[in-house]
Image (cartoon, rainbow, N blue to C red; front, side, top):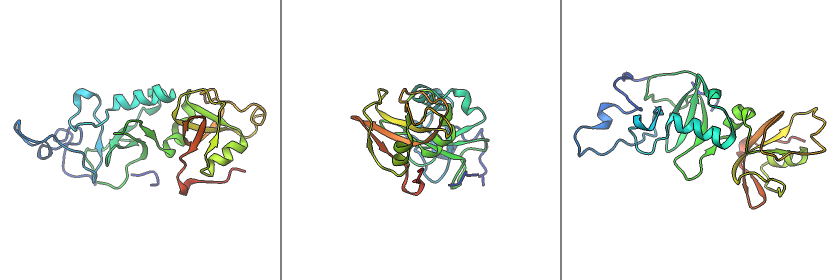
Length: 215
């Protein structure tokens, strides 16, 4: 069920937000249910349906992608969202009973449960073409350095600080080598990965195993 990286006997009625009756306990003195790192739990639709403290909701997730990168909510139509581990969120282009104890389920898209949510390289490469803000478009030399995992000065960027989508012009675009853009909008570009922009510097967060030579 995983994109590269067994269901149990619970029914949807028995498992709300991935928490069974046994997990939830009974009575006012029971401890609140906790996240289980050995299984996938579907995200609740809204905060009113949240059972596990701190678990992001589908509504919050869609809102974050739209506000941070301009990716419209309908981009995720047909996907269910899941948490496994502490804040590791996955998107799955189908639905299964929750919870489900498997190793992978779809595509890991985000790390939450921290001050600044961090999108994954896979998510940016898969869905980043729909982004309309906080997209840093690099020229060929800059893109090559970024893909190799190198940090670089980039004072021309005038968008938000924090995690940005680093992209490069698609081959054949005559503007690529003349006027590299850093307007925060995607256009005809290909996402490379996630960058961290701070104090005039673009830091590459491309995982070592995903680095490549674009030259």
